Image (cartoon, rainbow, N blue to C red; front, side, top):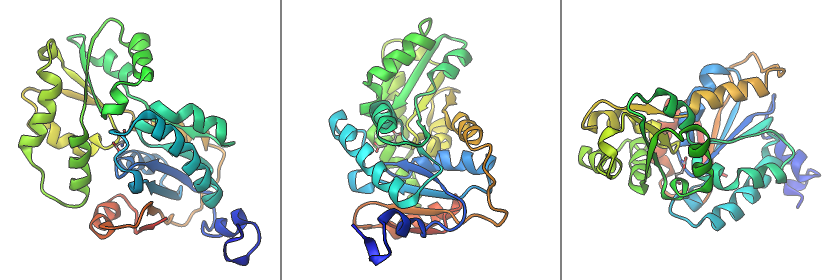
Length: 281
Ligand code: DGL
């Protein structure tokens, strides 16, 4: 398709991205903002394009086959449109299901987000760790492989919570939190047999670091929460180490798939992460 009569679609769209090729961050919703914050701290000059796939939100309650079909196709279209230097799949659900498929489909560096089981296992003193993710993530064979490789000497309990994803979305819309709901989510993990020994919890969904303070306040005892955002940021910095980012402050943009209903409620939350522009794809 020749969008706007300016020749090849890729060329035409890439004029949307003035200057350096951006980093494209992708999630089902607002969770990738936790990763965006860590990337901005390390690479303050790098322009970011953030895509929230709200048309298919939430991912965590969908069958793996749906995610596996959707994510590579959508990222292919977004890569054509924004010509990014690299893509960060800032979503554990999409990464644990579709990372290999995306890497095979696209000829550019793809950084995934997978549960931080390795650091959690090395931090835990009780040798009991919890993995809090989406329902889809906690049942992925990818998580079994991480557990076998890095936490074989730990008890590892899992809990999938769509409610916690919704709570993080609501927080970004500025809606007040509900402590009883956070306590309920934690009980789903800590009240399992063996859960009383857990001292370290992997936040295995990028939405969850956005509500880490609420989880800590709701916890029945001090817990160490671990996620992978700083490691992802270091990986992105390494992969882009030879790029000369523009000197002028970057203009970050956020795009939502779908009709954009309710998008206005998210603007202040995105602005707090440096995204002045929020619109539909
Ligand atoms: N933020 C996503 C993750 O890291 C998924 C949330 C959802 O859409 O269920 O898993």
